[in-house]
Length: 299
Image (cartoon, rainbow, N blue to C red; front, side):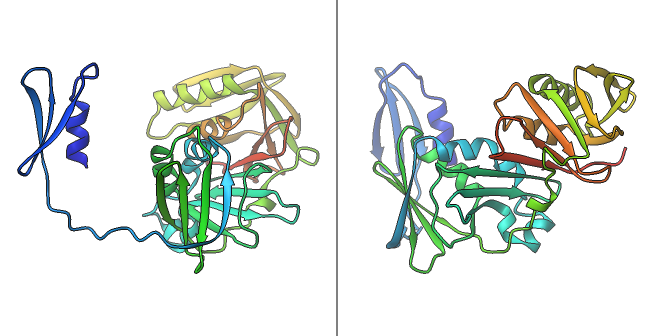
C-alpha cells in the first residue's frame, strides 16, 4: 500500500488513468504511451471476518471526524509508560452518565480533556476506549458527510463501523479511566480565574513553540494591572488578560495550552485554578460541555 500510494501521488491529476494488470505488474497508464508500474505481491493476509452485532448506535455526519481532529493529542502514546500501565489511556474513553449524556475523555497524565455531548450516542452500561489509531484511521476511511452506524459484537470486544459501502472493525480497550473530573476547577468556586482572548493566547503559544521547540515553557505573571508572559530569556510579551482572585506566577507548556485552546470556538477562554498547586482548568463561559486539564511545570 505504501508503494501504491507513492506511485499514485506521482500521477497527473488532470488525466484519465487506465489501470491494468500485466503479469505481476499493475500499470497506471495515461496519454498515448505514458505509464507508471507498480509491483504486486501474492495475497497472504486472511480475510477480515466481520462479526455479528447485537446492538447499534448511529453518529451524525462529521462527529467521528471532529473527534479525530481534536482529541487524539490528549491520549497517551501506545509505547508510553502510562499506556502500558493502563491500556485504555491509548484511546478516547466513552461512557454514559445517569442523565443519558455521553462523556468522552482522553488523558496522558500531563493533559486531559472531557467532552460532554447529547448528540453522541453510546451503549448503555459500557465504558471502553476506542484506540486513537482507530479513530484517526476511520476518519480517513469513512466519508464525513454520511451517518455512521456503530455496532458491538456479543463479546463486547469489537466495534463495527459502517458508512455507505464501507465497513471497518475496531477493537476496544478495557480498563478503569482515572478520575480526572475531581481535578477540574469550577468557574464559580475557582480560587483564581484568568480570562484571555483565545486567538491571542494561541498565537502566543505558537510563537513560543517556534522560538523554543524543545522546551516551550511559558511563565504567566502580573505587574500591577498588566499581564506578562516570559519564555526563559527569549521572549517577553504583554497580553490583554484579566485575573480575578489570588494572583501568582505559574508556568506551563505552550504546546499543551495551544491544544486545549484549539478545542473551543469562543472569543474568550478561561484558565482556572483551585489553588497554587492545582492543574490549569481551561474552559469557557458559554458552556460546561468541554473542559481541558493541563499540568503546571517547574519554572
